Image: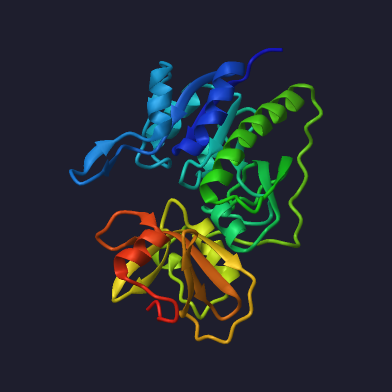
Length: 311
């Protein structure tokens, strides 16, 4: 079958497997990504992961500040693409761009739409305690992830999954899904259907304060926050007026009558803390200004004892 001429829009590492698959199977004629951003202490300009990968393959890379710019639109038109594929690009596409490719713009979205429309579907699916998630390929319209569904693929969210491990799985599933959708389209058997009107939910862009928790919350909610907010903003609380990040934690189903925040036990596994419902085992933490360490090392360094309040 003839290869499709594709313009790919993406920015983070999550999008690399999809671009890689399209590069191997189809004709990627250009890559559009976010401009270089300052990083680190020196605020040195750093390219997006997609830009780095694309340039390593000799692909043409565009980094427009605004997609609505008439010159940008005209440049993309001049490529005469069959398809524009979008994966975690980071900006809404204007109508003028949506109308450019012969077969439309397809988005690789990391949720089972209409659930978790928006910027952070993986994080919010974990936070809400979902048992499964997946990839949805949609034919894009002017709304926020509202276009007709072309294809969906599901995977379970496992007990040991966090936002980092789940993103890796969904990144590979996205590659599989977009290649399958293109193959079905070439065969003339890919039929878009509207998203269900029931079950719509949103996954807004993450803010630092989303990671905050207190031991007045349930152990299950604290565990979900520890899993959901990696690698940023990371679940956090405060200890002696200093920010205490929690990188790993597990809800332990035990009954107690202690005040939330009371240390129930300290062992090599971590610090077991009473919550409003059950207890949370803190496993890996980082105190403001210090390195990330095991919770047991933290307890030893702070001379914490069972019965004391972690506050």
